[in-house]
Amino acid sequence: MKHASPPLSAIAPDVLSGGGSTQPGAPVPLQGDEGVGTAAEAANDLVDELEPAVEWREIAIPVNLHGERVDRVLSQRLSEFSRSFVQQLIGQGAVELLSPVGSGASTLKPATRVRAGQVFRVALQPTPQSQAFVPQAMALRVVFEDEHLRIIDKPPGLVVHPAPGNWSGTLLNGLLALDAGAAELPRAGIVHRLDKDTSGLMLVARTRACMDRLMAQIAAREVRREYLAIVQGSWRGPGEREIDAPIGRDPQHRLRMAVVDLARQAGKPARTTAQCLATNDQATWVHCRLHTGRTHQIRVHLGHIGHRLFGDTQYAGPVVEGLQRQALHAFRLSLSHPITGEWLTCRAEWPTDLDAALQTLGLRYNETLLPALA
Image (tube, rainbow, N blue to C red; front, side, top):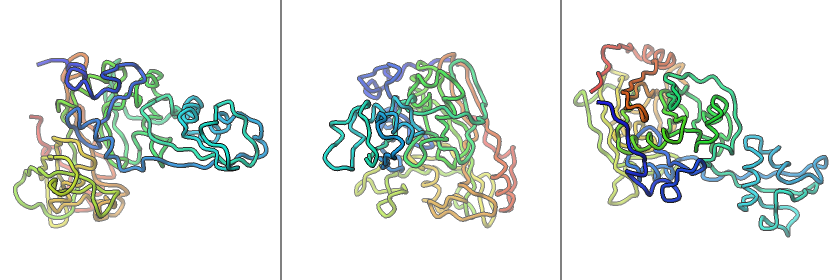
């Protein structure tokens, strides 16, 4: 049956900033990596990101730039960002004059003239403002496209959103170059994330109405997202397993997540359905469906039951010759079109690097083993 989802404010009016504002610059909260959740959880999952919250840069003024405006100089040195965003950073007090001592951010204005030898320190943080970043043309595989929505097949190695350590060369930069209208949307229309080294399908809104409705569908768990993974070891137990285990930050490794005891540690409920597609003594090909949206959920849950992903060095996963990333692929995505109500099911091709790894491990990709849509 065809239907269109209500706006996000109808489900969780407190999720949109400004009490449900739909102004073009207002941020729309994202869900965490690789999953879905409630509207409130969607906003909270931003806190779970494992990248550093702030990146500090120090910029020294050379002789040839003496007397130039500080916003012009900093925008030249911070080439990943627009000049208007640099002006915002100055106005917000995120730019500090370190040397010579005696003048701070409170006295700095965009039109302030710099002097040779001065050193400025800039605090850089992720922002939902698309206009903060520069368009960068890149080859993006579009699986579905209309005036409201795009579905992208993200390659491995592509960061989704600018953050410390990856301020340019991201999917957001590519979307800004692909679609002029993307600059008017928070995060260029991106409504969820995949890890850098996870490949596969991503939803990208092209209008604000579509973005709000996509977020409503994600919050209501009306978007079905399925993954394929290659994990270590022979499969144990029943062919299909429900992994219902809360996830929080790993107290021993702060750049990891882990299954936690909520009575003792901070965390959130998490649930994954994992199904064995094929197995042998050294590896298993697994289908996963997410029911919640926690950072690194599939990686953590499969590791929790004794099956780490091949190539996932962050979680001590085993290596396999020729594979340079974690063996995880978002292969199928199904939803009611947020505007037209038409039912959409999209597939991403099985990547060649994962196919080679599967064969190296003595298994074969078999289309007939993939579960049918419920």
